[in-house]
Length: 195
Image 1 (cartoon, one colour):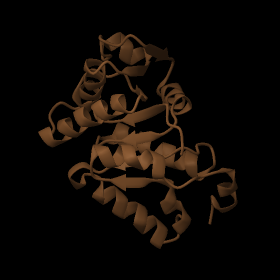
Image 2 (tube, rainbow, N blue to C red; image 1 turned 180 degrees about the horizontal axis):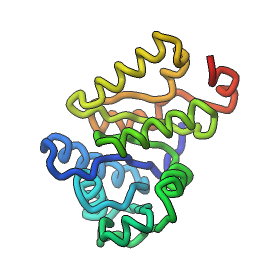
Image 3 (spheres, helix red, strand yellow; image 1 turned 135 degrees about the horizontal axis):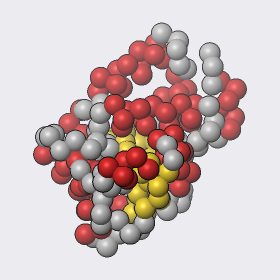
Image 4 (cartoon, helix red, strand yellow; image 1 turned 180 degrees about the vertical axis):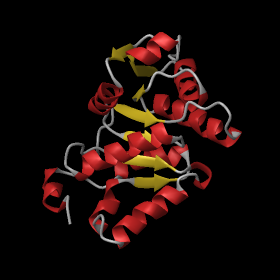
């Protein structure tokens, strides 16, 4: 069975969202702790970022926040974090989050979250990231994006094999389970990275 010691979580910083998303983030945080994993996330203190961090810390779990200097100076970081890394840029932040993780789970979020998700999918397509990518599609939030990705495949912008790069789930427990059952991915993918 695949070993997952740390999981990177991408999620929203917005506080003005439906409670269903907060509930899923809180549950996921508890499950990460129950499965003895460290959470790697963007160090934020609001929205789903704040919720998952507080959930993990309240349960006695391990969490590392990665935040660029300008965000830290704005005070956007969770003050409860004991383990926080400050980077020089957003690019360094994302690279560090990926480097520290054995897998990625994407919760709902805005442009920043979707950008992180699409970038890590691109890295996987190029053979730069081999770990599981799980899309937690709470309340069908990601349905339009998933339809777009399927359209990209239908119209030959991507290959059908690329559908194996991510796993879509509906609940936090399914997300944890998928970390261990996601299809294997290795360097051989470079031979079909382009069409």
